[in-house]
Length: 564
Image (cartoon, rainbow, N blue to C red):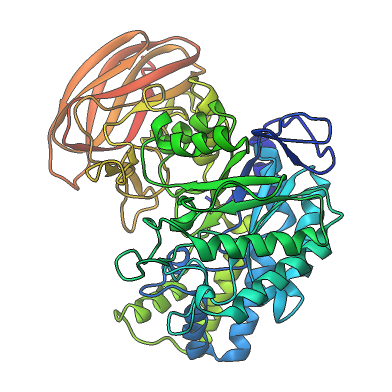
């Protein structure tokens, strides 16, 4: 599954038209370049690089970065923990990541910043300068996002690496002054950089000012006075040194509650909103569109993702229909619903078992080796590439055509893995009943790929332990189907053998004809069911496997040419 960088850059290359045209700015409800041309930002966030969240590393319990680091120091000591974090920062985001994003079709990057990298040392500026150089070389924009502010800007502690035992940003005037000074320092440093698209001045504030007990994340806040005052003060500080860059603001309640905040107070300002786990219809974004129209200001989807490919395709189609630029979250983590996946290792799993109280404490040597392997695994050269996620984001919103997941060249005897069905939208490449997580709109709609492995469509995929050929399609329901584009090199009469477990009825469509078979067996015990005498012509064509009656698992499809 590990993909060579050359493969990443060549096989998935999607042309991108446009380049930097000076500073971006706002013009009415649009973001434009210096020629007045509309710029639709298609971006992705580098979550987990400068700021780790526990879920990205499968760390149990409280997942603030300072607590993760404390756990690591307890295992290996401070010096080795420092070495791990240095290796992590060096590997997690590289020039090849940026080159790959450009090749895939993205034109921007959102950088979640941790304040301590910019205040206690200048490491943050050095890393950002290098990242900016990579972006400039590819004509890509960089959005600076203060993800972890001094003191922490909300009660969702992991997001901002907040220590809940200490005063928050909103309870500390010193931290507010520090935040304002930090933005002035950042603006001074980057005031002449046109490839910096904007300053996203405070990520996902989530704090209950009026009712901190019953509305701790500020979703029902009606006034948001402290938030507005701080963002106004940051804006003043930035404008003292930088008149050029767009300033992006976010509402309370994880970026969406703008009560009491509007109208905008700067002529070069964009409203951001964040969108997760709800339906993708016009109504779901109507409130932010109303703000856009009422205040004649652009809006930008600053963060979204963490769902299935179906949801991704729906969302991007919705945003672009409404001329809303977007930034996905994140580029990579330990998980399959992002373009790149960081693989684990046996030693790190031992660490997680220990932290979960399910295993013995690993030795310092074992733990340090595992952590350094994890840091290396975060490098794109060692990541697992999810082509299906990229295809769902960059092609499927605009095309119902399918593409083969693999070449599937059919000769005398060829085996197709069931999980390697075509790339494409639900209803074209496959059909599945439960496709995405819409739990905030409908608590019952929470399913995509139940197994959460290999691919990120609605198709349910499970992993078989202790098997080289380990992935298979499971939870198959009546009416669901999978399509495979095959390229037949030797026309003739073929037998098609399905490796199944469980009971069901299946229609196999190939060579212009449909064949029906019944499969029977025991769950977990693989058996072969055969369709005989299927005439296949030369060239590309479709093979479709449909469940007339579900209840079985499907592992592979083997095509065998009759040589008699």
